[in-house]
Image 1: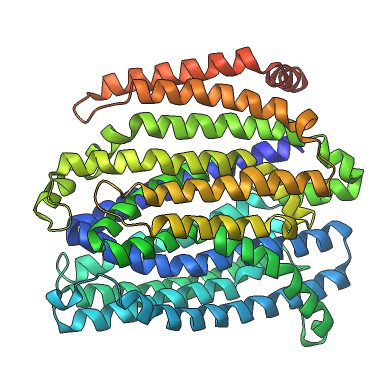
Image 2: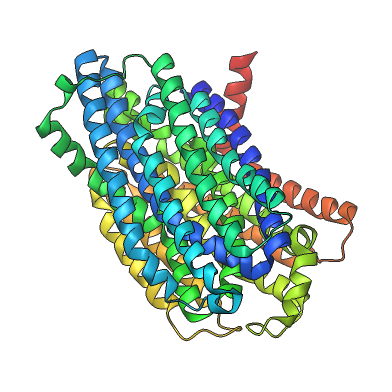
Length: 525
């Protein structure tokens, strides 16, 4: 299991670094051509696409679990029936995304967009962009069963390659559109062709995924005779819990973006888009370490029972927590300098904005400070991710979904408090509270009630060590936080000091990690 986790992590981090640089380019390119308000506009459209992404991730998780369980039992007839049922569920979810998108479009257009200032065709083009984002998400959801066949059969490398193919679409569409329209052209045409290009790329991606999956996982095939109504209904029931979790947890940042748009306008929505992009990258880098752990835990339960699964939770939680502390602490330390290098020139133009009435340097530090609270929520979530994925894989998601709903409602209520420039911090604070409620309370409580995990005996030592390492690392990051004027050598030395401190504190506080590393070294030699 350890070797497979390492291979999964390597392929996942390869994918994440590719998508990281693609995302850097996309945000920089949009800001260069359309400004911060244009980024807010495109980010708002991507927020509606975030709904379909949340449903896609929920269907990903649910379908991966169903297929992994069938593949683990090596029952070809069962695999065909489950494949047919999951395809039917994906098709229904795709139709749901289209319907919800049609409902969201008028809601989004009622926000503080000021589109009438840009011309009469912009609102119509933006509506088409929103619809195209929903259609693209629906297409990808309908094709989920083929990609998750690779994931469920533990071909994580192929799954990551397919996800890279999907991520390439956005920057490629942006390049083609802006170059074809002479560095931007009319904003209405830009929005229109971005939407149409996104739909075309999504269709090509789904077709390529189906071809690859059917060749690599030939047992995931189904005919009309394999459709079983009762199994479809049961799959929908099982997927409903995963969809609730993914919709509320995965769509939360985009939902808060809608709140920002309704209360503050496009400029602040552009700021929020940058914050959730950086925090999202940190989350993916942190959680990528154990991506694919849920099908592995399903296979492990079949082979060794629940006790075999439970015995691995403390070590996995410790490792995940330390990695999350290092990544989030590094971003806290690096963010002012990094934001200036990445978007500094574009942020200088924000000083003329009627929404902010400040200079670019102040906007930069506003983003960096808001990011600290957002990363706090990511740290809580990432530390509990191995436990949450294990509970999901074993079918216990219903035990913590109520806490996810409560956390989501708390986040929205807190974010709806009267906000001005100085009070923008209510939004990331709501996100932080939501993750504490969902993961810090809900997941831990569910683990004790379902798999018999003793929090005080099994998890408390690991969590205390993670807290000690986190306090030391984040304290250093905040104390020696980079400035916009630092040289690259100075920034490198600061990050080196952070890494040395992190490693020293981990080595001093956690003997189990040292023992694990020694065993792996001896085994490899």
